[in-house]
Length: 119
Image 1: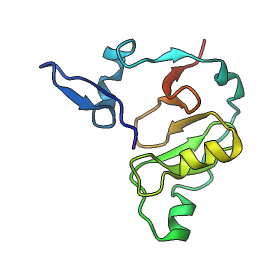
Image 2 (image 1 turned 90 degrees about the horizontal axis):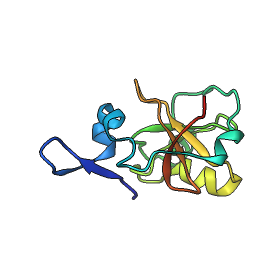
Image 3 (image 1 turned 135 degrees about the horizontal axis):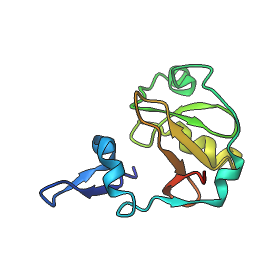
Image 4 (image 1 turned 60 degrees about the vertical axis):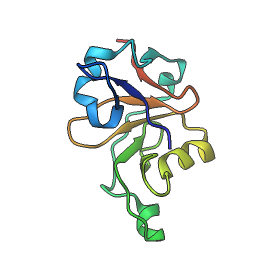
């Protein structure tokens, strides 16, 4: 399981998942970068709000992610079976985003980094 960490206000390291509301404060500290893979982002929307592979296998997803190339919805790396990562490896689709609540970050699997789009 890959979990990025960053310092909290007291300097202790905390998991990125639990501190996404603070991402804006730490963009350079956690390796957010521009990425050539953003050119593969398509105009996609999630067609389901569950990881169908987890449903088929009887496993439980932790958080949901959406492939920004094709719209596939899979579960995160913290899940028992990280289906979004498996999808990225199987298809070569590089960028996924969270579809949880108010999270709007993008992840590049080849670079293992948060990325931002050029405006």
